[in-house]
Structures are given as structure tokens and as C-alpha cells.
Length: 232
View 1 (cartoon, rainbow, N blue to C red):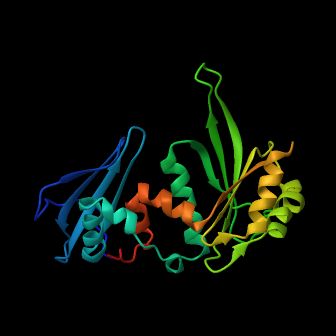
View 2: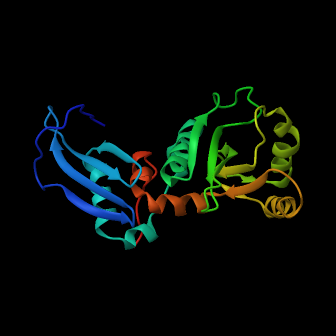
């Protein structure tokens, strides 16, 4: 995809605002690069963030369709095979950032490195509305397994074998995010763990949950090349 560093005067349609959600506004502008290729410069802004990106004609056309027809979001088809493990981890970082609920988001080490299984560290902002705000440490374990379910023994191994290797302040929440699914015994093990007096609280993000999140930010799905077709 062609990228340009300076925005030239726009050609085609003027900037078009589209409401993505209650607090977020998307503005796109058709521009022309030096080689004559038409690109769409897209800006997504909210109360506490602003992100810009550029797309070629194919990607831009898909985005315009998404913003022009809200029902497309319900039929949006994503292909997890279009990203690798590193891309999946970067996608999770973006989702944490866009949520506005986390700070100090940090990719700890290289994938599959000797880091005790940690992929992403973040701090969840917790407040009671009375000024007693705090930060809770969160670890996100990324498993890019589109065709494999995460089972109970794998979740238990994370909690019992790898948690003791995690240095620093206590981990209050462990998010296990997968581009696939969780087995029934994995879900049951997690529910039993969370009902007991154990730390950390475990949160499961399957591909279904992640796709629901990406429907809030369809530009992110397009940016990572996950968007395919929306069946009629």
C-alpha cells in the first residue's frame, strides 16, 4: 500500500464525518499521492485519543461501505488467518488502547521469549467515583490459534506454572485472548477458579468476543487486513 507523509489538497469528495459510536467521530478525505494513486486519509478521534491512517482504493472502498451502512457491521466477516502471532498481539494492544480503560500498555518481550508466557502488560484504571482511584495490573496472554481451542490444562498451566515467574506487583487480572475458542472444560475451569478466593481473576476473550469489539472500531479490523466480505 502506498503511504504519503504529507497530506496534499484533497480530490473527489470533501471530508465526510461518520459517527462510529457515541464518543467517536471518523472523518475521511480522498487524496492523491505523488504517483497518482488515490488514497483515503482517515482520522478517528474521541475525547481522549486521535488516530490517523491511510488506505488504498480497495481498503478505502470497504471502509466507506462499513460507515455508510451500519447493518454491514452485523454481517462483517473477519479472517484471522490474515495476521500472524505478532500481528494478533499488536491488535490486542490497539484494543486495550482504544478502550480508554487501560494505561501503561506494554509489550513485554518478543513472542515465545523467556518471559514466563507474558505477552502484554497493562494497568486497568479503577475508580469508585469518590476519588479513590487506583491501577490494577493486568497481563494479557495472546494465543493466535484460529483452529484450536484453549483447554483447561493450558489455562491451569498459565495460572499455576507461569504466574510464579511473573515479577513485579501482583497481577489482579489475567486476560487470555485467542483468535480461536475455549473448550467447555476450559470455560468450566475458569468459572470455578473465579468463584474461589484466588488471584488473578481470569477473563476469556475468544474470537467471538474480539469480533464484537472490532465491530465498535471497524477501521482497526481493516487496518490489520482482517476484513473480508459481508455476506448478504
